[in-house]
Amino acid sequence: SLKAKKHLVMSTPKVSPSMIRRKLPILKDVTDEEINKNYIFIMGMIEKLNDCNKCRKTNSEIQECYRDDIFVEEGRIYTASGPCPAHRKQAQRAKLEILIKNAHLSKRFISCNFSTYIVNEANKSAFQACKSYAESYPKDSGLFLYGPPGTGKTHLAVATLLNILNKGHKGMIITATDLFYEIRKSFAPGNEVNNILERVKKAEFLVLDDLGAEKETEF
Image 1 (cartoon, helix red, strand yellow):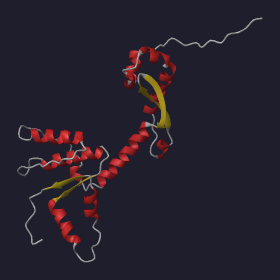
Image 2 (cartoon, helix red, strand yellow; image 1 turned 180 degrees about the vertical axis):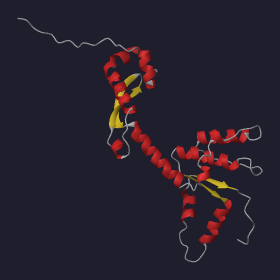
Image 3 (cartoon, one colour; image 1 turned 135 degrees about the horizontal axis):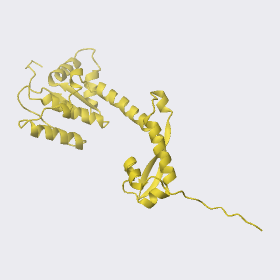
Image 4 (tube, one colour; image 1 turned 135 degrees about the vertical axis):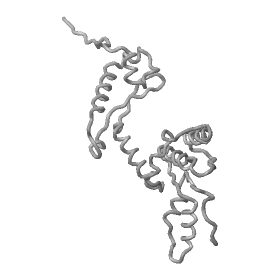
């Protein structure tokens, strides 16, 4: 009698592993053999990524989007399902907006970042110290910036703060004058809760601006 045998046919990859690695950098250390073995699945993922790049969904629509993502462990290719990257980025932006809102930052400081800071020989070491601090945060130590007015101390302090907020940490900026005013106000009869002071106490990273510029008072 005639018996039929079923064979698993693997098509010859049409896109080279090197080209696939350029499209999916996460596979840079994966062998050609592993890539070829998962070729059909990988190409399907690349097609889905292309569709995601063309996606125009916003807000609540993105929250409904889930997809498989590739991850690599010990040279093997695996998948994990989760929210699409656009949803994750949207959630991160929303969180950052809340952190910035609670950081007591005025509008004129929002654009104060390291890329807009003008570096020269006089402030180069302070710039490098602040940038290094922000990149390696969290740390147990703090920073003290000093110098004459107009040298960019507040710009550097805000740039450091914004970088730390971008990492998801809570932070805040307040001038020494405003802080002492809020402390003094908290002693007034009937003023049991001071929202500013509560935020100062809860801030993981606090920028105290213009320290030494406050006027001497009886308080």
